[in-house]
Amino acid sequence: MRYASPSRGYPRRYGSTTSRRLTLTFIPTLTLALTLTLTTQPDPNPNPDPDEQAEQEAGKVKVATQTQLLVQKEAETEAKRAVSEAEKRAAVATIELGKQLAEKQSMQRVEAIENDMHLARQKVAPMNRNPDPDPSPSPDPNPNP
Image 1 (cartoon, rainbow, N blue to C red):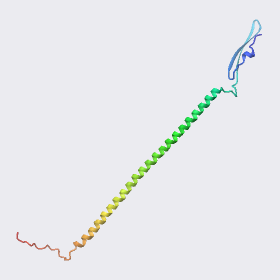
Image 2: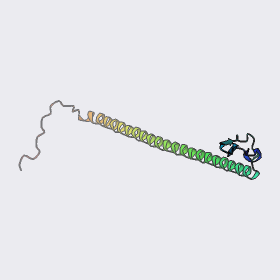
Image 3: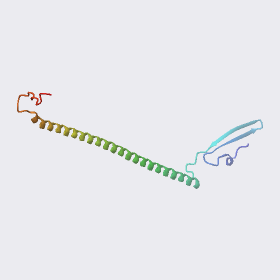
Image 4: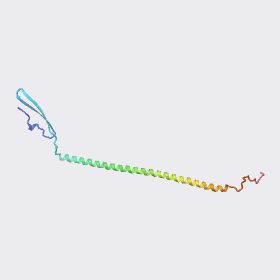
């Protein structure tokens, strides 16, 4: 009887697969062949290679650094956007205030002109009143031309 040796038939590393063929011969005319496939479980506590571990940690540090830079850039961009919006609102408010001021000044000028016109009419009104009620035309001093 021939069979595969257990020392050669099992996988040597975690997480690997090995196939072995087992042949049993009882009588020269009767042969039984079996194929056996063994798969091992992954190592639950693998001992990582120190170089790989250092490389992974360096990669994590790079990712964290880049993430921090991105967050800082986004914060700076947001601050600039807020300043720009505030400046825009201030400019609009200044324009609106100037518009209202100009409107009030023009209203004051119109009122001042109306007051001056009213005072001028009051001064002219007593002059237009004649003491003689007869508005007859005056005689022409030169009757001969």
